Length: 49
Image (cartoon, rainbow, N blue to C red; front, side, top):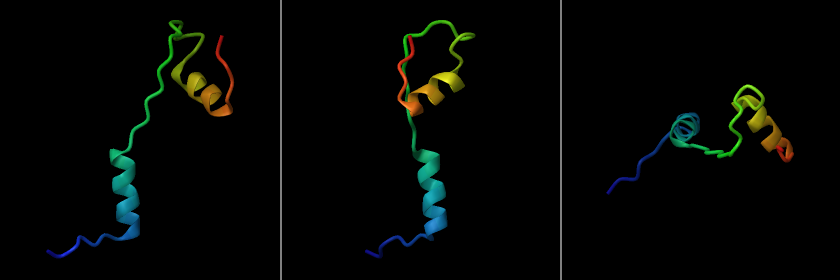
């Protein structure tokens, strides 16, 4: 069987398309805690209260 050969750039693009990240929170106020804020604070390591 012949191995599949892929350019590094094509591989990275394909990896990004199939990769996923799920961030779950129990905050219910979407105006106070929009998704962008939740993700930003998660990346900064902050607790959302």
